Image (cartoon, rainbow, N blue to C red; front, top):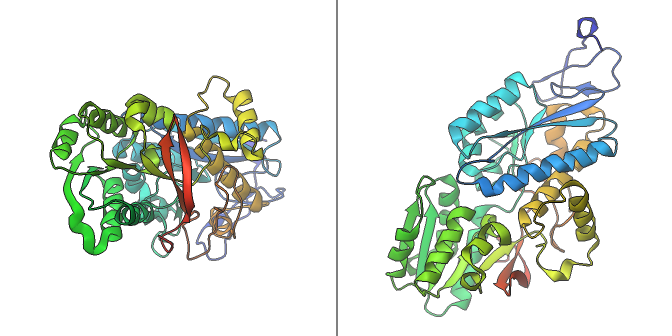
Amino acid sequence: MNTSRRTFLLGSVAGSGLLAWAPAWAKGTYDEGATDTSIKLGHTNPYSGPASSYSTIGKCISAFWTMVNDKGGINGRKIDFITLDDGYSPPKTVEMVRQLVEQDHVLACFNTLGTPTNTAIHKYMNQKKVPQLYVATGASKWGDPKHFPWTMGFQPDYHTEAIIYAKHILANVKDPKIAVIMQNDDYGKDYWEGFKAGLGKEADKVVKHVTYETTDPTVDSQVIELHGSGANVFFIIAIPKFAAQAIRKAGDLAWKPTTYLNNVSSSVTATLQPAGFDNSEGIITGLYLMDPTDKQWDNNDDMKVWRAFMAKYMPDANTADGNYVYAYAVSSLMEVTLKNCGDTLTRANLMKQAASFHKQKVPLLLPGITVSTSATDFYPIQAIRLARFKNGSWQLFGDVLSHESA
């Protein structure tokens, strides 16, 4: 199509303050980033830097959209997915996202990864009225439609997850003396605040709390300090690189506390394998997705479809890495959201559809866990199940838990 011959129809999208545009002959209503033939999505991911173990997520999302395009796209439109390396550096994320919005003119940014990195673009995306959708972080701030109507999370929020761990400790560990290691940023603080809220009047059970920076080479000195506190419970709030170091160092010290690990580091290949399976035995985490190392899912239809996808589109990938499951699940939800937009591919309609799910089943979510959203509820998933690492894989126990049921 010759751009010099395009004729555009302009009109406001109800309630959005945005201008919809489309060629005069188009079959749909569009904002920047969408046409009769394509939908452009932006993405940032740490393909390098301290959080590079999450590079598998970006690679799998790219493969997912290749699969979708091979099947004809979404409502006849191919996905143009632009993914950029921000190195888990907030200033770099700002630079990358400005490029995606102002130069590449994406319809939306999808699953940008990291709490500190998404925090850096949070206000910008909402000022620009560009969807920051299904971000790859569980910080509780992503569920604030009143103040940030263009940002929505995906996974269970860190605050609720930490409350559940705290309640479980109080109910199951006799005379707990708790040691906590925390990444010193918004991600770590969100877990920490939830954990203290869960302990309530028992917050003095925390006998030692230390932090680390993502620029630190190791957390060995912090773990030595925690070990010296006499704690019998260890809560690890860390990304995979540092979580693996913490678990391994505890093993080196022959320290055997009851250990809780935040969900974002639950990957067997990214965290527990580098830490050593012997050192990881008995660790507790919260899961909301099927873990590919758990043999109970081997005959599950969703898992069979996922394994077939991996075999075709990512044949060299290590399918024990749960990050691939995560990437497939969140991409599946985005696919449905875009399908539900029909031929009205405006940013306002995209957010409207994202906020209109009721007990939506998403591939690879654990049984009993679904996606529900509304105009006032931007927390798609609000439940987890606890799991214990045993004999090289996660084993679920107990019921589906939410903040309310904790």
